[in-house]
Image (cartoon, rainbow, N blue to C red; front, side, top):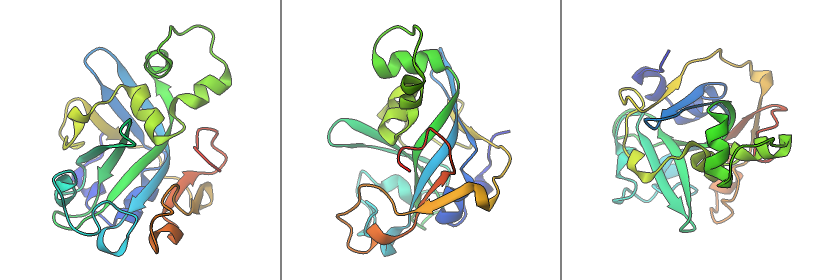
Length: 203
């Protein structure tokens, strides 16, 4: 069952933690991709100098002002797309970066999208490397910037399916990755991942 608005319009940290284990579904018109969310990071607005929007909204970040459930997708290093889910009520700024997923369906097409070669007899390492990072999972799913602003609650192309909530002892909490530029935010324990899952980007 698709997650509804009430799931997303809550505290960003809670949304980031409870997205773990849920299934990200994307249908590009030809292939349906499904993957279990295994790693997330929360970004919490004005108090968080690790977020893009802590100094206020720009044209790029304007979607953060919308109610939770909208997609915030952007480019880093001029190459990689990052897939984020807006959290909180309208006007309260927060977003969750999806850092890694475990492939469930559409794996052969994910392989073609990522490696630009036919699916043959892939190694376990190749399968894990499909989606064990935020830029990787976007490439594997074949997502583009056209998804910016899409609503996971109503869009027919993309949504998140509910799944059993994980126990707290199955979840690891740590500092976020690659935000050393943030004076305070770099020390916030706002990264969550499923303990012992091989698809997590970094242990």
